[in-house]
Every structure is written in C-alpha cells, then in structure tokens.
Length: 177
Image 1: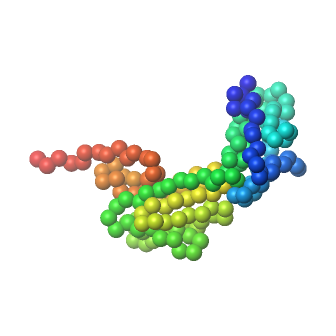
Image 2: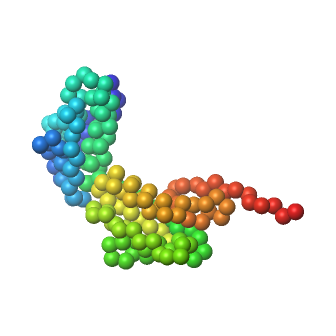
Image 3: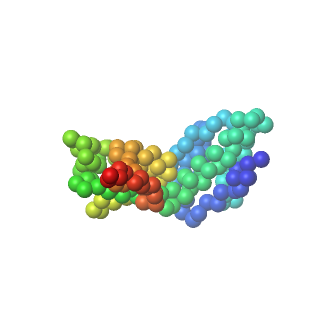
C-alpha cells in the first residue's frame, strides 16, 4: 500500500483538474500542465479532490501508484505557485547574461556557452544569481541541472555554478615545503 497514493489531493480554488483520453490536465493561474497516464493507474476527480488508484493488482500498478500521485500533486501545486530554483555563479571573471530566449555563460572556456531556455520556464539573472521558475517541477529541475552541468563547482576554490543551498566541500590543496 502506498502511503502517498492513499492520500486524496485537494484541489485549491481557481484550479481545474480533468481526466480525459488517458491523460490528466491541470489548469490554474500559473498555466496548464498535461501528463499522460499509464494504463495501470486510474485517476478520478470528485468532491474537490483528486484520487489516484491502481487499476489492477499487478506489481507495476502498486509501484506506479505513489509516483503518479506525486506527479499530480506537483502539477496542482505548480499551476498555483511556480517552482523556483536558484543557481549561484562563483569565480573571478565568470559572468552570466540573459540574451533573448537563452542564457549566455562565460565560465572560463574560450567561448561563451549559450543555453536555450525551454518554453514554460522563466529565467531571471541578477548579478551572478540565476533564478529559474516554472509550473512544471520536472522541467525546472532538469533545466537547472543542465545549466549547472556546464561548470560544476570545483573543490579547491569553489568556482563554478552551484545551487543556492548546496555546500561545496573544499579541499586543502598543495602544501608549501
């Protein structure tokens, strides 16, 4: 039994959840999200709440039960209040700029790295802090990870892109004789 799957997902005021053609769609003030359903999972909307249940007694259905409940919960939460991730750029001469629909990173390479911002995500750059937000939790997390992977923080001086709450373990380096 899934502890997460058993809980009903409350639908806030101003949010519309519908199930049709094997997909769940959630509309709210922050946009619209749609996710296809697996055949082993059934989703129903009743009395202002969403109920996710396994369609059969297979091992796959019980494995996907809590996963799809979390997906639907994240969709409902995302269309009401966007998910936000922040990246901090550290390093002498390292810069980031927003140019049109892409991020331009100068992170110690011989050329600037340009990363296109996907649809449904907004990026804001203030000094060396990149704030990425959007309704889709999965898309926000993946894009943030892709940006961070261009220059991960190194352990000696801590230069590179790191998450706001990430702690970079520092190494001592060489000792003078």
